[in-house]
Length: 115
Length: 110
Image (tube, rainbow over all chains, first blue to last red; front, side, top):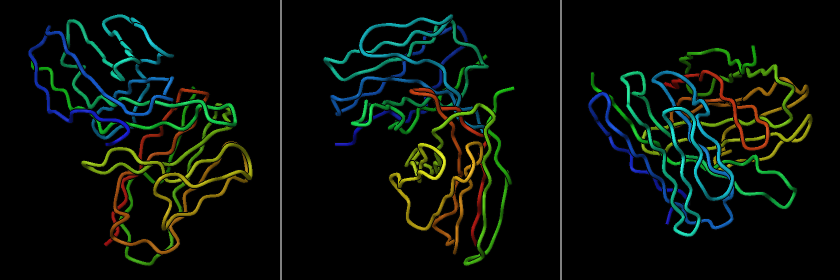
């Protein structure tokens, strides 16, 4: 079983739709959960960062972490054509040296929001 | 402006010709890393560095070298590139939990 599983899509939705993107993971040591957005021909950019379980909201974006189910989600409300991108989940654990720099990425979900 | 820069952005080369991709960050971060991104395989870490003169292998280090002589720079070296190293490469610079990526270098080895 891969450490992080993410459905690659593609996912195509109409403008204004609510989008749900998900990842599952197997490593129970993961404590830090991130979502990155990657536009075509660009580097990934950090969108949301969550520690442990719970929800975090930032504008139209909500990140959810369910550690008991080893499942994380990103919700996009009122989706816009400018949200069209690949969304990557990423996770990390605190290592024996006390740092959590090492990220494990999902393979990304390609999202297209149609006007 | 906080940023990670990479050069070159695009490179076409031939098998066996040594090349270096430069990476520089202006955020005074200690941790830097290199990734390659391939269709269907996602982002995979090649090498990382916790600080000056401290480097270690990531998940796919074969065929690559790195150095960290200064805090801001972390070049990726391909001593003898092969076609299977054709990929999109990203440098990243990090605070704990937050990685900032460069714009990418698209490398083609023929």
